[in-house]
Structures are given as C-alpha cells and as structure tokens.
Length: 196
Image (cartoon, rainbow, N blue to C red):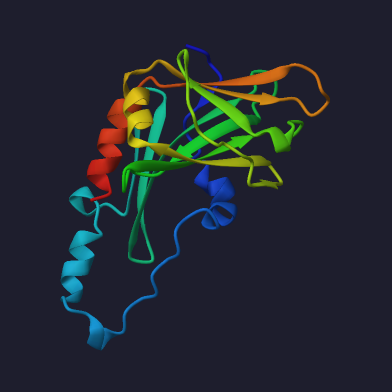
C-alpha cells in the first residue's frame, strides 16, 4: 500500500466552485404556500445519523464526507494522492452518490498534460469505453468530469485499481495515475445509505 494516499482533505474543498458547473441545476426553493409538507419533515429527511451536522468516515483508501449545508445534505467520497517528496497533492478523485444509473465524479489531475487528448480509464486490465475529456483547469490542476455507468461502478466495487492515463503535453510518454479501489464498495454502500 503506497504511503502517498492522503485521506484527510476532500477534493470538494478545493474544486467546489468549478464543480458546480458540472452538477445538475439546483431547483429554486419553493415558496412557503407551495410546500405540500411540514418543515419538520424536510429537516428530518435532510439530517444525518444521530443528529450529526457532518460525518467523515474512512473505508479502506476512501473518505466519505456528508454534511448539512443550507438545509441540504451534501455527500461525496474521495481519495487524494500526494507527493512523497513535498507532500503536495498530485491528483485526486471525488464521486457523488450513485443516482439515475450513474455515479458522477470529477478527477483532478496536475498541469503538464495534453488536454485535447482527454484521459483513458481502466479498471484493473479492463479499458472503459468512456469519453473522458478535460473540462477546465483551476489554480490547482485540471478537471475531468466523468459519469460512470452503473456497470462500471459495480466493476470498481470488485476491482483493485482504477488507472487513469493521460498524454504528457511535451509529447513525451504517457503519465499514469493509479487510484486504489480498496474500500470502494464499502464507501459506495455507506454514501448511498447516508444520501437517502
């Protein structure tokens, strides 16, 4: 198990503003007279176990984070890899709870990659047939949004590693980023339960 996995900092803290463009539009709040239910029901549905305002749990190499923000439950699970030399983040992945037959995610990769080429993804030795393109770059790296179909999410539950390959911008060799799937199944199950 490599020592370069840092589990304490969710990627969402870094890319929240950029990732908002990747998420579905937020439904505007209903006015009070339109609400067909009592406010207490809304609070109960948007609460975490034991009345917690946030939850941070570790499952293998994955961190599950859930919190209540502006009366909305926000849950993600993530993995961050840092450099052994300087401790700085090299790459990270963050996923939302599975919904509508897919698991939305964003991968943060370092600068110096050929953006037009996108990335190639493999679960162990199985190449995924996904169009994985860079969407934008932010001060800490470049983002690749991916909607994993349910079949790929299930394969990750059984797999050992997700391998992300990107071409170097200088025309050199490809760069490979390996994401451990240790604890992925437990993290998916837990975040699905918490997001209800």
